Length: 81
Image (cartoon, rainbow, N blue to C red):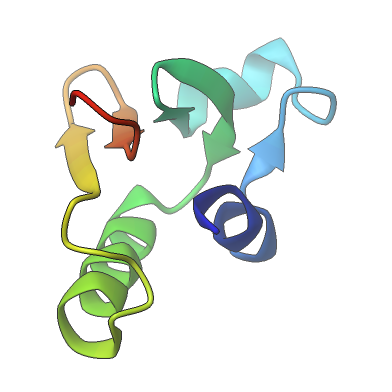
């Protein structure tokens, strides 16, 4: 469900991105794998948090971390996180 959501919410996958676009966007990692970039990380994190807290679409066991300095969003949903 996380990967499908990210695809719908404007995450550009690795085949679509150029080196110049990486500099201006946040890298998105799911369970340690770099899956793409997103150009508005604030909006993405706010939406992910809202879905987890209010809508129960994302279960509470999913960990979401935004590393602002590294321009990364890390999402962990695997066992043993």
